Image (cartoon, rainbow, N blue to C red; front, side, top):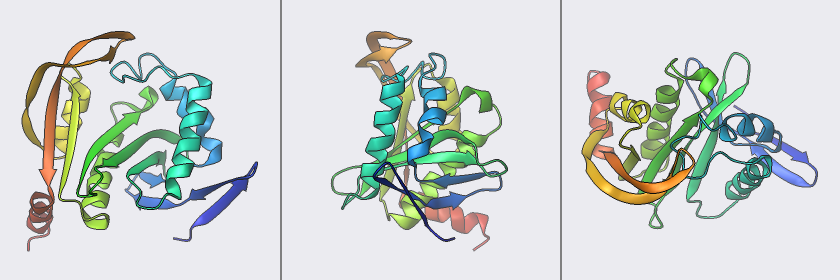
Length: 205
């Protein structure tokens, strides 16, 4: 696919499609994405387990600007992408990898607009992020974590075939449901060699 560069209001956004699934395409954020981002990031239910939410409209705009800056950063450590419906092009969430400074490991994150919960889109996008991380970035290990009561997020990690590595009890002082409190977290991970072996098994090699 050809890369399309969009220039608006003196800012450049690289509207690059990173990956595709049967129903989704995953691309870089662009300057026009603030409204769609704010629809889910500004919603209290949507961000219940996110320590940064709900977000203001200005916060959503600042997020977009930060992602545009990451796109042109050397030795990039943040790969946070827009998740869009292939049929309509609508932005329905985001999925990302947040690399360690040595660029050998990353933490997987994702959020989806609640209008699209229950259709498997989050797992579909997150699976592509694992593929991107292990095959394109040559990562050694990808981790994921969630609040211990966030059963929906944990279900995604399980469907991805990630390995449960344990639960840390009352280990993070964070905001959940709009209130700062001590919370427990569940931790999952996958090694590159485990991912590659699974790919070979699925392909009958």
